[in-house]
Length: 397
Image (cartoon, rainbow, N blue to C red; front, side):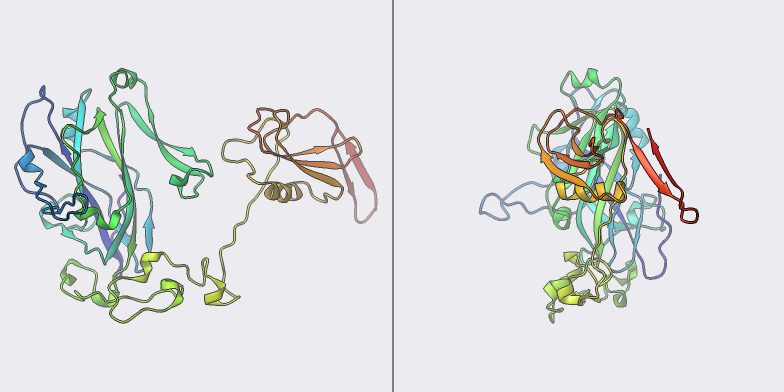
């Protein structure tokens, strides 16, 4: 289990705590938890154009059980975006034991961001947890997974078209383990995912499922969360549980010039421009705001060549322009060459370089999902000349 170090002065320490609600199958003993009300109070529900319609949002009155889980502590500075995976966390032992080789039915969940006592020990004193105001640490979104004895989370390559990866080359994917087939044959999942796009509204959004519906999972053992939250608390107002009554009317802290489209912070604003994730002059800043000397975002790539086979997943060149740049970096002194884009099953997929009989090079970008690979067949040569003796060595293989 990973726990962030205790916050330094000026840092905010927050913890994401989730409450998962369970409905009992008829075959299980009906040992309900004590009714203690919802984690976040009553929920207001809309129906079509009607707001605050009559609706019972009290989970305990529906006969549901629940258990709470705490994520590792997060310590951030003002203006910092925390978008970091927090690794596998164990479910409570009594839950693991109770549902070993059984099916758990999740019929809803609640979520909160809290400051814990003592720092660094989430869940030790839940009665002392203090909710973090939304304008202290803005919950942009989060993604959570639950796995079990017969499933795992694995990092896999993502395709450029996969928008869920936000441009990253790797993403998390749930995969079954041996033994999962006996549950899956009955239509029972061995893992589950909880994606919360409306992070800021998550605490007061009702996440109960319609009657008769649930997320099922066999033999659950662990949960896993990747939160994204933005530290927006003006440090002049304080950042401890004792500072909740300070700056009750929102007071923004310093903001990058690029926030709010470069128009500046208006008087009496009720939100932070940091919510836009604006760039500054050091990282990705817009030259129209910061001037031509800004250190705008620069992407550099390193390329390598393989003599045979095909590139591994996630390593392929994606455009013809990038293919030409890669060829020039891998083949020094490339002077005589031709370039073409093809769609062929007989040419390696992506970017390849072929030496012709004349000695010139052919750079080919293949848009087809070909299974053909590079071949070491043919001759290769290299020439080197000593600067002092002027002796030239040419080696042909």
